[in-house]
Length: 114
Image 1 (spheres, rainbow, N blue to C red):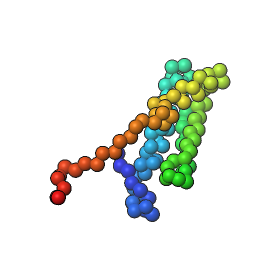
Image 2 (cartoon, rainbow, N blue to C red):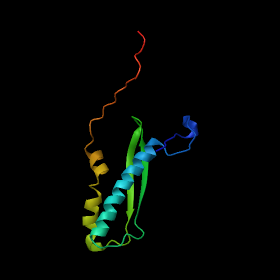
Image 3 (tube, helix red, strand yellow):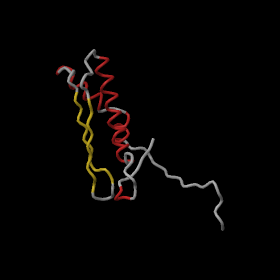
């Protein structure tokens, strides 16, 4: 997978940014759960889509808000509440709600000179 940054940030803007990949991963996870729900309930997946938008937070620099708009034309009104509960429990959404510990380890294959 390729990733890049915009030209104004020193990149070539040749691929999605890491932030865009992160948001796309969340959208893909929600889409997977949505499609699986529709298929399991014998509902059409035609026209189903997930659109993702996000806003930056002021400080510290991070994503401050994410909105996922799920369109499911084949969804019946009777199944709407169950559908919402299922897609809100996708793995990545659950991870964001209860974030894991993140450790960053900096290593080198060479021994640094003393």
